[in-house]
Length: 44
Image (cartoon, rainbow, N blue to C red):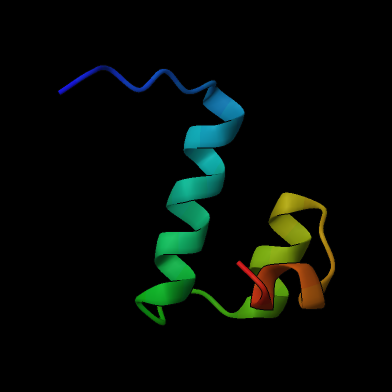
């Protein structure tokens, strides 16, 4: 298996989306944190 290289920004995005998936963070809060729209978060 190979390595996956991610930037700090990408790692942060994965963590925020994981929190949304675990229902520890709302979609609205995640959208604000990532400077995205609610619709963009819902499509992830």
